[in-house]
Amino acid sequence: MTSRPQILLVEDDEIVAAIIGELARDLAEVRWAASAERALELLKAADWDLVIADVGLPGISGIEFARAAKRTHPLVSVLILTADASFRTAVDAIRADADDFLTKPIDAATLPDKLAELIAATRERKDAQRDVVLAIGAHPDDVEIGCGGILLRHVARGDTVAVLTLTGGENGGSVAERAAESRNAADLMSARLFHTDLADTSVSEGGSTINAIKAVIDEIHPRTIYTHTINDVHQDHRNVHRATLVAARNVPRTYCYQAPSTTVDFRPARFLAIDDFIDGKLAAIRAYSSQVKLRRYLEEDLLRATARYWSRFCQARYAEPLEVAREGDVPINPNPPNPDTEELTHAM
Amino acid sequence: MSTVLAAPPVGGTEASTPIAEALRAIWQDHRALLRTRVDQIGAAVAGLSTGDLMPGASREAECSAHMIAGTAGTFGFHRASALAQALELGLSGDGTPDVVRLSGLVRELRDELELG
Image (tube, rainbow over all chains, first blue to last red; front, side, top):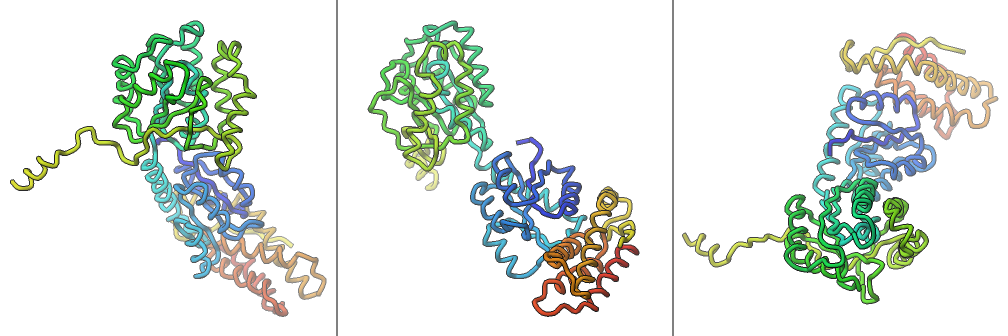
């Protein structure tokens, strides 16, 4: 990540806010909230690198706010500021999972280094958690319909997202138009688009499809893959599912999304909240204007109702469902060590 | 009642560093607010001595003292920070405030900030 760091400062004294804003100017963008209530609203507004909270705030205290910030943004460093250097306040800060604690008056000479250190710690944690995601679809718009909200959720947490669309969708409209729509949709989701030209409605489960998927996997090294479910009446979708399982055999996590042609045998076990991303998903689908005009399954109320329905399986208002094809936590080694050779090596 | 606040000593930083320059600029920008805070404390202590303190004025003065205690030291006014802290404590006490002592602290605080 190379973007300019973002600091959220919650401080009711505008002089302290001005001091911190000035001292952090070369390091980060500082957004100031004078109350914890306002800061709680702002927490969702950016990918923060550091949260600074004064303890003595009107209304919700800085300690309570820090606890809430850590609960929703566990990777972000939290710095507590207080004029009260008592043992009690220090214990409260530790219990709120704060990363550091500074007493006022602030030492202007050392503050910039402290802020830089906490920002670096956040970024290290985020880098360690960052995922590379590949969503594979047979046709333009399959991925957006099946897991568009989930992809936007990945982007929001800083993951790298790519979309592989295997055919031009020529049986459903102009290839050029659908390709342009795919690019627009990918741009709207901040995803990188790979678009190959396998034959629409004749996608095989064999070599050409496996190779097309494998080429992208080898280029971007995803750790999470989304693909079609096998439980689908469309032959292209089923074959992309099968080809993905072969091509992605060394990728630790593979999940399967639904499509309008999914059968009643689709049995998801994973439900991801997309409350904050449903509008983005619908915008990406609207990018396929040539299809939106023709396909009743792209009507917005149906898409929204589908996400609303799946939310009954999780604590959300909107959700997307996934079948789990494989879920591991480390990449699968394609060349595992041979135990016999290992023993021989040790014996030597 | 008004006070003229001096240029800050920006203690702990070299006089010509960018940090010292930045602190001086912030001090200049917020002089009026600091003056208001000192005056607010002074008015509350005066109200205590005459017995006609407005409701909430003591709490506001305590809050102003707390804020001065938390900022003055950053500008190098360490004694002013300590005085403001003593005022905060004096205004927050449950018992009868020692008005004479508090008045003296306000005077000293004003002097400290004037003299830098």
